[in-house]
Length: 250
Image (cartoon, rainbow, N blue to C red; front, side, top):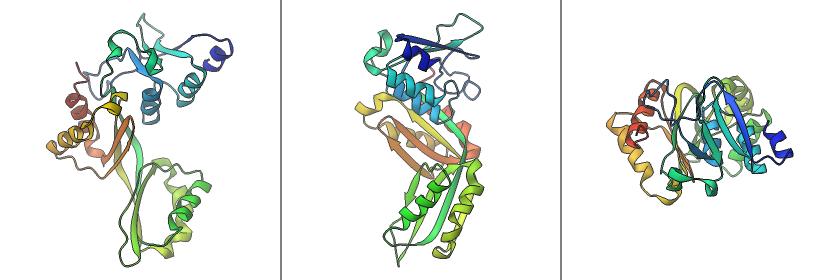
């Protein structure tokens, strides 16, 4: 639909689904989740890539490339839905960009922990090259400072690719002390273009999670996103906590 809209030079493409639009988080987790009236392509891409299932990544990528405005709305009512546009096209209330727009949760994650890996030039390239050959998508990566010629390497993958990951890493087993796969984890992400111009967003999240005794295992950031890896049993609590601390329920 987006490709056709672009080919026809249409300025708007409406996508009808079974929900009213894009929400600040999953309403099944947080009943106070609010429908977002306007959101940027980049924010939508981040949310879609981390569990928000309202739109496919490819649709948003294509809309951004072709400069086609998107509206996603419910097929069964007259909801205005959510407008997805470039930041420069924000209107009305969205002219003052909120710091955080949404909280996303991805439970389809696994952490791979490699301990005592040979600390030599090229080892990371070899490991991640082997994973790439198996088409394994690696997300968060943490490497410790090497000691005594060895280092520890942790990274996350989608849970459904554990068996392929084991196959890809077989040739490296002799070059490490141990390897562990943890499926009891989840990734919670804070998304918002307002982060680009505001400091302290991460510290607010970390303090809120600490107050709820939620330990952070790994962290990754981009210009408009902060993701934390936590124990899966705290996943929904973390979403509700972050949703509240950034006042997304208002």
